[in-house]
Image: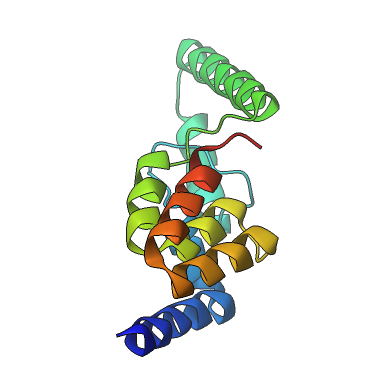
Length: 140
């Protein structure tokens, strides 16, 4: 049984390390209403510009106000360290099912916490779960 779990975990982790698209899909699911920092596609920008050009002055001011308030909210959220994209409940469920994966997704890198949790999980499953929950729910 341990061999099966080890093989399954190895396959799962190898897919996460070598496939950036899969890791991004697992780590940060994005809703359509959230603002994601980065560069949007050129077609998206063109269509947004065209839509903005056809608005009245009052609607343009309201949109600009809304965007400014969203930027202020995003900066305050980033500064405080609490991000609305962190899904603690999902990480807790994952910590019970696959503790090393939960630690990896929480830490966003392979570090000593990941290796400790992997060792605890392979030796005895319950200490690995407890350690993963401590890492996920603990404050950094």
